Image 1 (cartoon, rainbow, N blue to C red):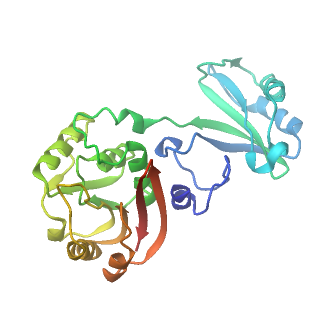
Image 2 (image 1 turned 90 degrees about the horizontal axis):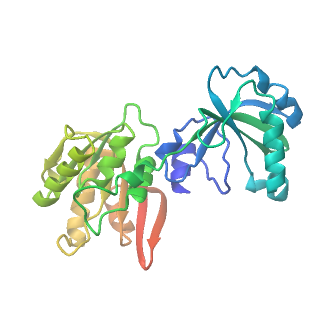
Image 3 (image 1 turned 90 degrees about the vertical axis):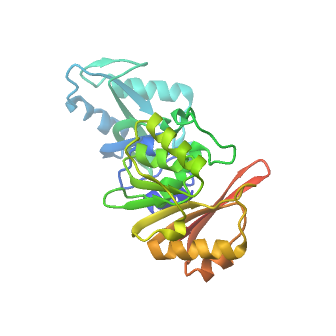
Length: 294
């Protein structure tokens, strides 16, 4: 929900969200596909009459009927309805249908009493491939959560300079770089910094900077920072040290996404930040707080 608010400016409580903002679906672990609307009509037959004008060339195609759970039974199709409606639309195309590996996919759904139809772009689970990195920490963010946190931090990529000043083994860095985000890392632990560089090189990002050093020594300015607060046995820090870290972040970034396992609201506010949005991510009895601060 927090990622959707960051990307689209509003919640997505059901399976479809209509927006003028165009997001590549593979960016998000929570977006399955995107439908770029081409036709809209009160009757599906009116749309069927228009699809014959789509130029496919030698491309094969597939048509998908997509449920809209927000509208309850009115927005859902039975299995037989889906197949029948898909055939009805598919027969109007001038081209060859291919169910398994089509060159192009199209979809339609009922939204607000009207039908929409458009070309479908399927999302790919890019973050899953990043699980196979050479260096791992048991306490590191999962690649799925890391990718969502990056999208929360940098919903619009162009012209945004980002830093992960406690980058650990580079989980956040890899997700950000795979989306084309301008990011660099910093890490105070030399073993972790070495692991981050090895992981980046493994995925083809060996030229990206990972600086060995304390985040409190940062002098450059960034648009956004992503800070997964240290919490394991090797990096326990006192409230005073937390305040010093957060104060330094206030100097080098106007917007920070904090990830923490404990409630640090008073320290964040004392450091000069306001918490503008938040969520929790739970796995068993382990809970992380994700805080959007400005």
